[in-house]
Length: 497
Image (cartoon, rainbow, N blue to C red; front, top):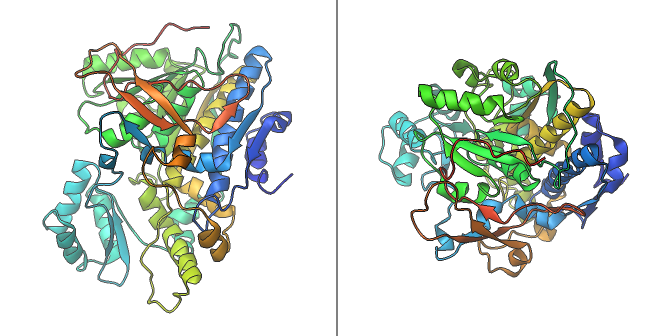
């Protein structure tokens, strides 16, 4: 077993999937340093994407007996873990697709530390400004933040439903109550939550997930990436968002690929009834609400498995299901800051540049991509398909759990590269342009799906990154995307098999 394959094999076996399937997984190119980071992000990306593809292939084998190989190129996997930067819509300026709001980022605090704030959603931005009592400019925020202790601001932000984290080292995180609560938590957890008959395997699917219905209630990156992956393997993924919440078009366009989209307000009785009907006929319930939040709307895991015995209930959160932060809001960049990665990456880069005499703490250095989000998304897709496998072999209803912090903990367990190897030999990511020769090598054309509702303008064409997991017999489906959040009626397609 090579070092590059070891993480994939360990995770595959941990979910009790057939070991012989591992011979059909091919991880190509040296995974690290596939990008300029001191962490093994190439291994993490290639492993997670490879496992999601292999789980799809294994689910098809269970349904049809067809065996096929799965291959993943390491550099392609890394680029796909920044897919939100590598797409363009015909006739639109590529430069407008910014990932972060202008006010988001890192600010110095009174106690010689740093805080990272997240302001992409308007209500999160306003909450930060209300705490600081300042104008909505970086300069004003920087001045106001110098009056705050980092941890005190983080605590106040959590109380006010804003999103911010103080900078911590690995040591500070792993001795923090939430770090202690998370210790030894695997990146993917499968829990049998109720009994149910074994899934019927009759039919003649063409792709692994043909006939599988996925109700996708997620936002931002990790959850939508998961849903996009399941759609690529044939699932009917209905992406449900609330008309009361703001859209994030710079992200939503890319992560809508392969899905159908609709909007429902779960605070409206008619929409709740519609949503309940969708749930009763779903195979996968994919959600990224904070732990316990959906139970208050009667769509928690216990509610859903009663409504639909045999369902896979997939849950994603920031910091895990135990500990004082289990209900805390979080995004990839903030989890990186809170859990030690930004300090470790900054120290490694200082060692490479010879800047070891600089005052500490060094300014936080983030990963060159949203690795926690993307890897978590593929891990969740892997776990969902492993759970679907169990519904055939064992029966039952299953919950799949993935948190950004546990995925980060797993990435750290892969080890850290020598700083010279990381930053001299690690390849920087290409510019944000589909015209770049390396990006265009992996590009695919995507047409805008017409949907059930009329388009407000001419049909668009998008160029995006293709899926990095290549299946030898059943290539993924990736030629269409709604590119909007309310393109379809809130109903399932007829089952195809």
